[in-house]
Length: 336
Image 1 (cartoon, rainbow, N blue to C red):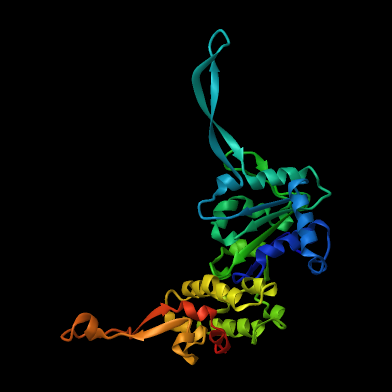
Image 2 (cartoon, one colour):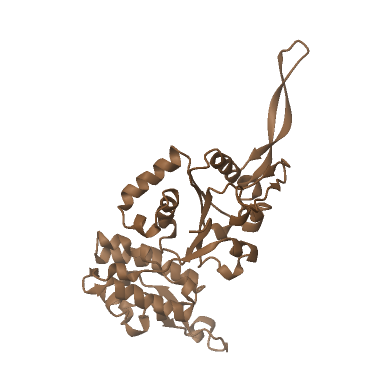
C-alpha cells in the first residue's frame, strides 16, 4: 500500500467507513482484506484506542473555508499582560503575533518521535478543500521518495515560521473523495501524481438474499444504478450504505423512509430538477399514477395564462412528489 491513498467513489459506498480498516491495516502491516474479515465493532474499538490514547491516528474533514493556516501553520494574535516598573501587572495588555502549528504539522512532529510505529492521517472529503492551497509547499515533501529517511529526502522552509520541515517516512495519508461532488479529472495533476486511488463502487450483491415483501433489494439497487449510469454517469451511482438499515428491518416502512429521505433528494440533486430523468430512473412511466414517485401533470396554458395568450415553451408538464408512493409496494415492484 502506498504512503498516500484516496478512497474514491459515489456517495454511500463506504469510503469513510473503510478508513478504519485501512488505518488498522497500515498500523499493523496487515493486508486490508484480512482486516475487513474481522468484526468491525472490535476493529472500531481498536481504532478509537489508537486515536485517543496513542495519537497514531488523526481524523479531519476538509471544507472550503479551511486553509494552510489550520492545516500546516498560521499566525494568530495573543494578548500578553504587561508589567509596570515595580513589576506589578497592569490592566494594559500587549498584543503579539505567534506562529500556531496546524494539525498536520503537529501530527508529523509526534510521528517523528516514534519512528518505529506507523501513523495514519485521515482526510475525509479531501476534494472539498483546495488541496494545493492546503498543503502549500508540502505538496513536494509528501511524495514517498521525498520523505525523511529516504535517499532523496527533502525539507522545505515553512511560510510563516521559516523553519525547515519534512514529512516523516512513517506517516501515511488516507483521504476519501466523493466523485458526485467533484471528478478526479478536475484534481490538480500534482495531487493526482502523489496519491494512489482506490475505487469504491456500490456493492448491490450485499443484498442478494434481502427482500422487502417480494422485492429483491439487490435487483432494485442494480437497475437504479444502471439507469443513472446511462442518464448521468457512473460517478453518480447510489451506494449500498443507504440500504443497510433494511438488513435489520426489511419493511416497506423502512424502504419508504430511505427513498423519501435519501434516494429521491439525491436524484433531485443529480439531475438538477430534471424530473423527467428522475421518472425514468424510478420507472414511473411503467406505473399507475398512484404508484409513481414523481407525478407529471400536463400544463393547460390557456387556463393559467388566458385563452388569448400564445406560449411556445418546451415545458409540457409540471411535476410533484407523490408521498403515498413511498409506502406502496407496487411502486417498487414496477420499478423494474
